[in-house]
Amino acid sequence: MNRLVKTCVHPDGYFLVSCHRPSYYVLNHRLNETILNLGQLEDGRIIQNLANFPKGDLHIDKAQPIFEIPNAFPFWGTTFILGNIARENSKKDFPIRFEPKGKCNFENWDDFFKLEIKDIPRPVVLAIAQTCKDPSILKKLLPLCAEFIRDKKGKITGMKYERDENGKIRPRILDHDLYETLGNNPFLPDYLKRLLLLNPGIQGLSPIVGEFVDKKRCHIWEYLRANSYIPWGHFAANMAQDAVRYSVDTLDENDVRGLRHLYYQRIFTTLFVELGNSLEKRGLFSEKELEEIRLKILEEIKRVKAKKNLKFSATLWGWNFGYDFSPSGFRLNASHQQIHQQFALIPETSLEITSKKEVPTYAIGDSVEAFITLYEREFARPFFDCFIKAIESNKRIDEGTDISGELTVFRDENVILFAPKAQRSQGELQLLCLKPVGNILESDLDTRRSIDLAILKAVKALTGLGARMITSFEISKRFFSSSDQRLMYSFLPKHPQSPGAFSEQQGRWITGHFPEDFARACRRVLKR
Image (cartoon, rainbow, N blue to C red):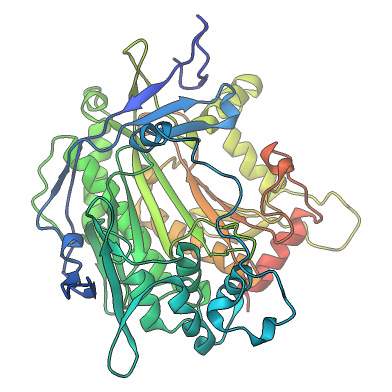
């Protein structure tokens, strides 16, 4: 199957389905251990986070199989089915319900203001947990979400743990939605944020395999999500428990540099070893060291045999900033932690289960390559040269006014951050490399620094305009592609009145502003 014509419909009239059966090796770059007491079982046994700090490199053997099914229409993307979970669910009545969990537990509102906290209707409790700015009130809601250990003065010091029906040890959480909503409220005291969400181990047994730490109060853990919804696992760079960041206002250039450094380090060192090279060092690599590794990888990729030795051919990076949970029970953004980023490597192929042949995998950048190939064939000009020229020479639709027609929000010699002429999400920003750079492997140190700074400026501009939830993601080309595809990033804020509806699902993005005015507003925020 041609990567540029990707569909699940085979010409012989059957569906193409491929399967990933991941087993892989993970380099452990973690610097330190932070062993903490998370809580205790009923028998008094102390629960620690030892499992989150494994010794040496890791070998992940037989992670759950993941089925990959391209949509019949390529512009609708690709579906990934989690094999183990889907098989378990197939043994039950269909487990998915589209109604939110929890019911209103109180019908007579006449005596509402006389209620004890435990009797307050759940929708009201969720609304308080999401919107309240009073720490004392938020703390009063904690007993409704989980059971805690307290010291003699009544201060919470840890979680109560229990064994589930399978014997696994887990925190005794009574209401997961309320638990996460309280843990994500910026006004909850920091020591409680750590106990609920931030301490290593409190969210599960995922091993920490990387760490960024410096003298500027920046500390970031890199978690491995081994049995991931992304085939072959993915990594999450989370601000650590001693570097609490819950808003973009508290985020500086060094924090974003650290988050992105872990991304570059993971991709570069993994590919270097995949190509058969020995990597003696473990720990935090300097920017100079990573640049040397990157150049060696690029040199090897030029050789024909590299494609046979390297199973990965693309990267994935994304960031869901912000959290919201509606009183009616709908989760409005998929972030477990306010400041974190996720990244992974995408394999070149997976095994098609009918023909037993290797078929191309999905990466969002493939759609861009397919389009620019057609564009250049039609107009005999490179698309991105035309795109950049159009951004630079833009004229307003409502010509004749004295309002700026500038789409650019930020620019340096390497990148341009701009408001796209045709905006999605009622306020999208995009970031584009000005030079022929298609992925992070082709990005030199100066370009990577420009990208990191522009990412920070993008989220600061959007939050400065009031954005509380922003989805950001990378669009890059395959390592072995020779096209002039440029590395791009998209920043999509959720709009309060329409975080997602049928128009968006059809690719019809309805806005009430000109893109030039949005770019002007973003520039104004960045000048403050």
